[in-house]
Image (cartoon, rainbow, N blue to C red):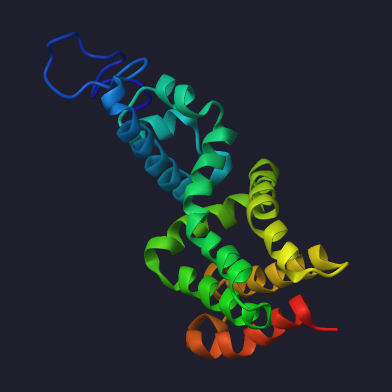
Length: 216
C-alpha cells in the first residue's frame, strides 16, 4: 500500500471490494480512542525510523492504516503530531520530575541519574527516546518541541524544588549532564562508555548531577 492508494492501484477500491480499506473522515466515538492511540504508536515508529525531516503525515497515516485526514483531525500538523508523540514517549521520564519534587533534594542526583539510565537501558523506552533525540538534533522544529517539553514539564519543576536564585541554571546543567551521557553511550556509542556497567555509570555521574543541583 502506498500513500492513500489501495494495493496495486491508484485509488481506493470500490465498496464491497475485498481487502481492508482505510477509514475516511471522522470515526465513530467508540473507535476514537483506539484510533488516536494507533496513530500515536505509528507516529513514534515513523519518527524513529525516518527522523522528523523524512517523516510525513501521509506516511504516519499509512503506518496506522487510516486516511491522512484522520491524522489531521486528531493532531493537526506534522509538528503537532510529533509533539503529541514525544509527550507520550517522554511520559516515563516525568517520574524523574516527580521523584525530585517529592524526595529529599540531597538525593535527587542519584534518583535522576538512576531513572534516566533505567529508561535508556530498557529497549521499550529506548526506541522512542532515540527518535526524540535524533529528530531534535537534526531539525530545529523538532528541537523547539523538545525544548518546550523539557522546560515546561521537567526543568521548571526541578528548579522550583532546588529553591536557589540560580535554580533554573542548576536544573539545566543537571539535565545537560544526563543528556550528554545518554548521547555518548546510547546514540553515538563511544567506547568504553557504551559497554560500561550501568551501575558504574550511576556511581560516577550521580555525584556530578547532585553537585549541579545543590553544590556551591
